[in-house]
Each structure stands twice: as structure tokens, then as C-alpha cells.
Length: 566
Image (cartoon, rainbow, N blue to C red):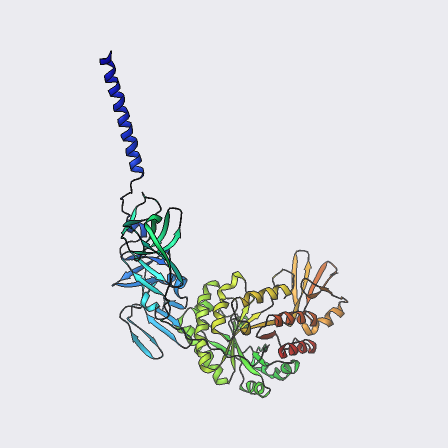
């Protein structure tokens, strides 16, 4: 009997031993540190010739490239993360950078750049074109930008901001792993005494960055001596200040719509209407073709008359009047996207203004597409250099800002031009088929608030409408017509309608029937203009403009005169 039991016991013991060994193996495997090394090419997502970009403490999807041992960023990376002042003209194979006083030009693949002082040699190609993308040397970007970069085998550490950082010392030889966990692949070994930057501390692991900018995880028990360090910022580049020309007090500008040379004879009539006006802006100049040619109705005698009356003259250049007058095709994108045409246009504007003895330039480019936005801003940069050099005030007319027209870049305009004029009207416009106010108080006030988020108050000028719109709805047809501010009272009397104050729009409103038609009008008058001026005064704006001379009343001009004197 005993002989039969012993083998059974032995078998059971062996089974238990095997089970214990298996369980112990699993237990041991569970708590044994993994030794798998990370595939660093896969981790950084790079191929040969590429470098991953670590911006501050985050890896970008963008990659840097290395050509002839020189680090290059693609144009989009430079614009998004480093400096949006660069401008590319692929057709003319040029990279431009405009400062407050000059434009630096680098030809594609050239080891030099040029400016007013001549040509400057470089030890590398400033930029090159590959697969329709422009790449710019990191060191060339550094000529105009404060940032720091360090190149490693597969990645690049990039810093654009500096502050305080927390560091810790490695207490025992260990590994930096891709994720928190002992089985996670190893990025690299890390030795006792090495200092790492602490990015995020968790329960048992911490996210760290090593001295060679590898970002991964280390067990908390391997770290000691928490301390704080202050980073030393890079300040090698000091941008030129954009100096501005400012009026002694508030701007009070009246646009004089001049449709021919004969229109200049209306000067005295226009000025006689005004009160408190210190700038007159005749609409003399309009682009005539896709080469940037200009039509001019300018008059030296007009300028002299204005100066004799103590008025500054800011000539208006637009991109639509000639086209409207003649039906000729004028493509603003074609003009502004060509460096040759754009710079010729800017040069002609500045030289014409000086020859005529103008005090300033008023740019009124409307209907620009989003595609045209970057070229328009480069045009303003280049023009601002010439205006600053020649002592000309540069003012720019803009729509009330919304998300859909933010490519007019009021933030950049606020830096480079002297006055940003907001055309505070066209909330509802002629031909829109949508009856409503031309300029309700919320439309004006909210638009100014959005402007003031981007432009210094002293540079902002709000333009008032000296007109209103009469809307007619008959069945499904909606038509409209302009009514001048100085004619609106006579019109309301003629149709025997008395408007009532509408608190929502801060305008007098009237609605009436005539036959099958419904008429609506949101009136611009002394009351509505006064509310707008009070809002403008409270916001501390740089002044007021009016569209247009010849449409005003003595009462409204007296309100403007009082506003300017505040």
C-alpha cells in the first residue's frame, strides 16, 4: 500500500513545484525591468536627413531638415512658431524680411542677402525650394529672431520662451522610458548624478527631459534633490522700433470723393461744410491695371489751398474706383503677389505723395480675398518703410473686424502704420437685400472693442456714415437707396413720417406702408452720431473720420468739433 502511495505523493509534489515555478516565473517576469530598446527613428518619426523638433517641452509634427550640415526649417514652421515677418515670392525666387527701415532680400540658394547697404555674404544658403516648399536656414532666421536651438542625432531642441524650470538629480543608474512602466521601451540609459528637468510628477513615475532633450519617464524613487533654476533668455536680436507720426490731438478726417480733375473745384464747398476737421482725404488715386499703374486726379493747387487752411492732405489710393468707372479688370492679387509690381507700386505712391507735398497716404484697398491677405500685409510693410523715410503719415482703411476678414491683420497694421481707420458702417449695405441699420451702436462698439484688442487706442480712428439707407420690400423683392444725412429730414417730412428712437440700435427708426410696399429706415442724425461719438470718446480713440464730405450738417459737424476738442 505504501509503495503505491509514494509515487502519487511524488507526482503531486512535482506538480506543485512546477506550478510554483510557473507562478514564480510569471511573478518574476511581472516585476523584472524590461530591456527592450526603443526604435528612435520610429519614436521621433524621422527619416534620413530629418530632425524631430522639440519646441519647449513638446514634440511638433513639423520636422527640421539637414542639408550640408546646416539646419533648415520649412516656411510654415518659421511662420507658425518663430517669426511671421518672412515673405516668400516663389515666382521671383526670393525670400524677403521687412524691418522698420529696410527690406532684406535673399535669392533662393544664394549664400548671401541684400539690403540698402548692399550684399552680405553668408556661410550657408539662406533658403532653397524643394517640392514646392521653401526651407529657411535656422541661422538666417536667427538674424531677425530671438530663439535658441541645439541639434542632436535625430532631434532638435528649440526654445522661444524662457522662465523657471524644476530640475532633479538621478540618484541611481536607471533608464528613461517612453512611458511610465518598467516594461516600456528604453529611450536611453541615465547615470547617477545626471540632472534632468522635471516636467510632470505622477504617483510612481515622473515625466522628465534629459540634458540631450530626450523626453520620457523615470521612476520617482530614482530621483532626488528637487530644485528650481532660472533660464537665461536669448536676446541676441533687437527688433527696430516702428516709429509713428501722430497728430497733435485727435484726427478729424473728411473723405472728399473726387471723381475727376474737375471735382477738385469743390474744395472750398467741402471745407465750408466742416467744423473741427484737420485732415482732408481726396480720393485721387486708383489702380488701373495688373501692373500696378495708377490713375490720378491730383492737384497741386488743391494741396496748397488745404495747407493754407491749416489742413493736412492725405491722398487716397484705392483698388476699385477705376475698375468701377471703366469696367477694366484690375486684379489686386496679381499686383500685390508680385514683388516687382508691389514694390514699384509702393515706390510710386511714396514718390507721388512727396512730389505733391502731401502730408500722408490713405490706403483703401477693399474686396481683398483671403489669399491676397499675406501679400497685402507685405505691401503695407514695404510702404510703411517708405512713408517713415519720407515723413508721410500712413493710414489704412479697414472693414469692421470679424473672424472672416482677419486676414487684413489689424494686429500687424497696429505695429507698422500710423493710423488704423475702421469704416464703422456697412452693417447692412446697398444691394445686400437684407434690411437693417447701416451702423447700429452694438455693431460699432463691438467692432471697436475687437479692434482695440489688436491696435493701440491712439492709432484707431472710427469712420462715421454721413448717410443712411431706405429699404423697400415689395413681395419678395428688396431694393434700397442711399439718403444723405443732410437730406434725411426733408425726406421724412415729404413722406410724412416721424421716426421713433430705437434703444437697441441707438437710432431713430421708421417703418410705413405705401401701396404693396413696406419701407424701413434706420436714421443717421445728430442723435445717433452723438451716441457714437460718446462711445468713441469713452474708448480713447485716436480720432474720427466721415464718409463723406458734402453729406453732413452743421449740427453734426459741431458735435465732431466738440469731440475733437476733448
